[in-house]
Image 1 (cartoon, rainbow, N blue to C red):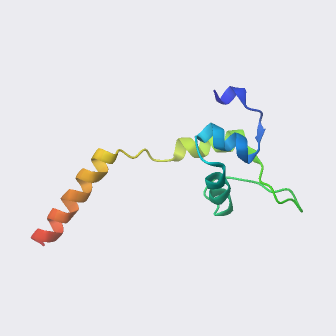
Image 2: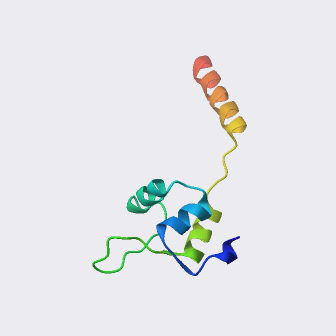
Length: 81
């Protein structure tokens, strides 16, 4: 799937690749969460596909069931204090 994209992406392409809303992609770019580049004087972001894929690989996977279990264990630990 990633092979279908060119080496330099715009926000819409990154949104599609990551399955995000374009406004979320832009916000995360402004906040420095997603690696993004602006050309001098430019208002729009550009993304290097390789950087986006590397960033995605570096993101931890969260399992909601495990997260809930960990939260319950922390609450028990605080209660037994």
